[in-house]
Image (cartoon, rainbow, N blue to C red):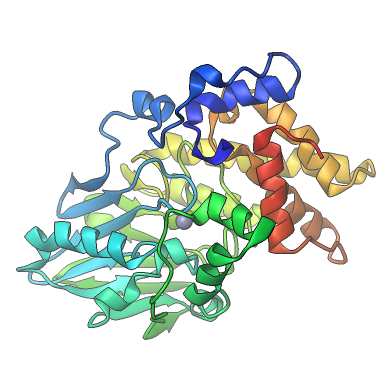
Length: 358
Ligand SMILES: [Zn+2]
């Protein structure tokens, strides 16, 4: 099944889809969840807590594909701030256990949810004693896709269930109590955690309706949430893409050195610039095809082929997300454009990545 293929296989799948190579996958089995392509270029990209210096930490979950998100911990004097929880309770519990070495003496008093996607907030109940901070838009959006909905989709029979399990079958959505923010803000919020200054900046709508980045100026560190996918393709659910490009420009202009993405290995301003380039490319190319009268699905299929031939973001995982990204460009160009429902959008991403043009 394509979704369990390591990303090193993706370029080959693409060549097969383009008719440039015979489909001979026998030598590729068993496909494992390890990510040889990305690991070889991302030294130290391993699951667990990573010390960044100056009391900042990142919790990374390779391979960074669907649901495998990162989180962060900022440790101050006697108090800590957690950036995001994980997709389910066992994963979040494991992460919090690993953080105990720091949180025993500096308990988590503040949890920031960068956005409303479940892989960044479904573990909130395990940090329920902390103040939970998010943007107003994120707090609102969090109630729209409750864990019970994903649990039901994952348990659904037939094609729809198979489709969702192909993306999210590794996670346990049963028994999660959605735990919403207890404090909300708009645009910007300055926090003090254990004597440290932390800045929350709302840069959405972009990936979702209310994306927030978390900046720790004294450590020259930024936790970006899903404003950055590294080694994987950004997915623009909300848009417009110009907001996301502006968020990249904002970060590129900051005095920061360490960048913790929402998915993928640690990066720096070079990683931000690559994501900006991708978004700029998609906006330009999709707009040109829209103006030439192509429909969104034909545009997505054409751009998937174009991207596959590129040496920069052509090597990224989850390239099928171009289907969602083109829809978002088309909506921003034409407010009357109707985007298919979310099941159909997942279907299209799966089809593109399986190399099936139907
Ligand atoms: Zn995410």
